[in-house]
Length: 147
Image 1 (spheres, rainbow, N blue to C red):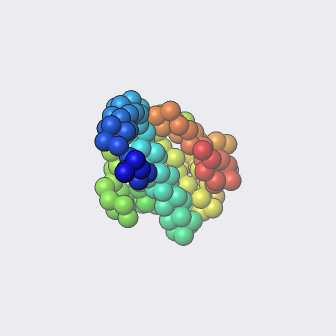
Image 2: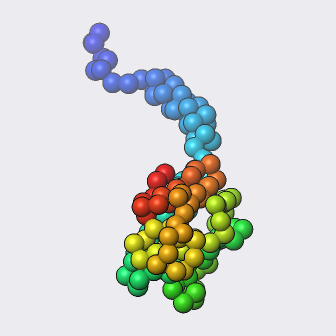
């Protein structure tokens, strides 16, 4: 009868582990900010909408644009009409600050960032920069998107 312990956990050990897990969760959980996920989500939506406008501009021969306003942006087609986006609303509202090289960026027939809707001239942006919260997107002269 000396060997009653069969290798299980005692109640004291279980309570101590549960208390330690509770204390750790109180310290760790507040450090995970939902704002980081929201920023990343809005950034991914913005990049997807830029790609959408570039693609539509390449298919239609150029002239699609993205227009930036404080707190939002709008995608417009080659006839300067607001289009409906696959993801939902247009203009797209933003919860975070956004600054850009210029208030409007057109895309030419190759999807490159252009200063006007005339795709046949050579007034492309070298780099069209979008500063979003603490992140940056650069539309380079070749039409690529750099983060």
